[in-house]
Length: 239
Image (cartoon, rainbow, N blue to C red; front, side, top):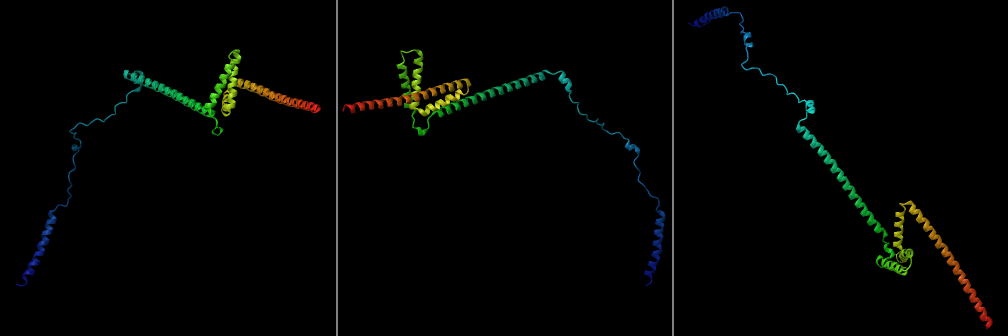
């Protein structure tokens, strides 16, 4: 009884080997491959129609537009010309206005600087208001003195008296006025030369007059001294 399991195991081993050999004989040794798709599938037509390639629209021809401009193009051209003309006219008007304002400002600055240059310095203690009245009165006195004379004296004497009074009463102001007149005369060479000639002649005449006056003064003093000496001599002889 103890040997039954062992006998059963030994009997089962040949049976298992025979079953394994039978299965290997029944299984085919050839390799099976899947069927490839037929060419008819690739040649099938699509359901939707193929879209044609998109093409860019042709650029508008400029030669045709230039050769045959439309009314809108002509109007735009005329408006452009009008704008250019208006811009140029505005620029020219603005330049003229700027030049006019610059000239006006320059004239105002020149006038104010000229008036300021005629004023005497503060340390001169020279007052224009009473001094100007004195000069005016002196010129009126010269005019009154020559009212019955010829027109040359009536025109020259008041002017000479007024200028002389100005040099006496307002020397600094008259010097400034003279310098201003000389600066204006320098712009006209002929007038400047005549002025220099007349001024030189006047200075030479004044120098000769001073020399003559000094000579006359010395002669008068000598004559008075000699006369005094003669009188004194007569007095001594009489005494």
